[in-house]
Length: 178
Image (cartoon, rainbow, N blue to C red; front, side, top):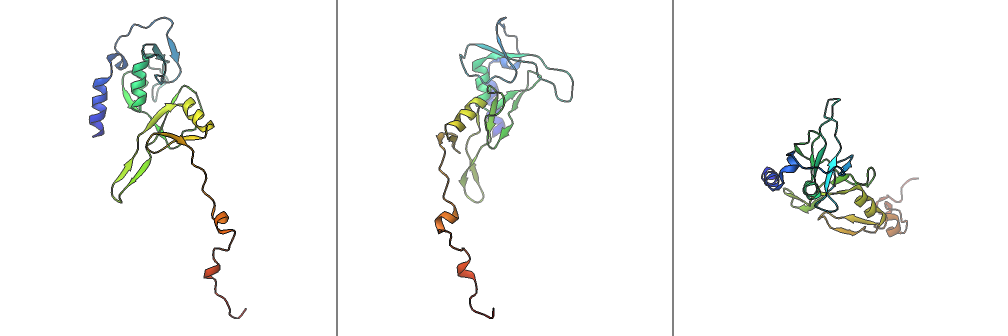
């Protein structure tokens, strides 16, 4: 099923993301990491050449409209260093916003429940490191459904609930020969 969705995505992407010729203005912005697509959708943004795997060589500079970079980001995709291949972005469990503020980090889908045999997961959420850092500063999180919500308050500890009562008191043997 995922292949069908990814295949449909490729049909929707404009050709310039695949490396077709694009008229690049001399003053185009060049980012060190894959652009997130934030900003004016009609602005052409380029990604600096990336090191090819297992090689000392670099791939080509990749350029596209912000709207095209945003389509990749929104679907958890990235452009490989070869400048042509669309790949899945690596995901992390808890993005913290560290690193290049303009770089995109994807949070892995979170378990939203289900039955014993079928688990259900929310969406993968891909945003800039600046977004994740701002979220942390404002004491908010992205929930399992992909919605930004207030960070839940910490639940009280067992000691606070029990007023420091010995949790094993009811299980100790009393009496005896000591």
